[in-house]
Length: 180
Image 1 (spheres, helix red, strand yellow):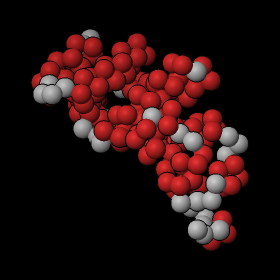
Image 2 (image 1 turned 120 degrees about the vertical axis):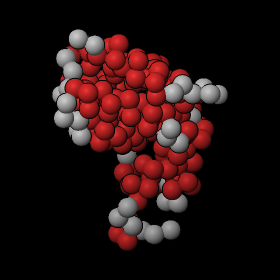
Image 3 (image 1 turned 135 degrees about the horizontal axis):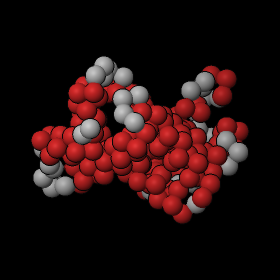
């Protein structure tokens, strides 16, 4: 194993290994030892880089939320008109529902953790605030909140359905919420 001096990416590998472990075993399966093994770092690196398992989970889930927020931004930043914004939301729903199962599992592990442990709700609230802020660049605050919920719900339904609904249904749902 490389030392910290010759392994400047160690912290990033630990965060990536944490997310992979959560995706494979759930938050309940996370331990310093398993993450150290998976990231191929000495066990002592865990406490060198993170104050404890909660710090590690918060930072790993923050990294994941940042990745999803970037997908939101990528889709919504291109919209220059209300119609383009609606189309961007439709594309976003279909993009998010077709990501690897890993991302779906990670999102729901975070939601479950936040539902069980109030100290993680701030992270999910910040994630929702970021999503809504991006939506509010194109829609009023109430519509943005409704669209955020629609994106979450339709993404989940499409991802888990044996036969996912098509773009036409997504378009009708978005049009109903965004109709003047």
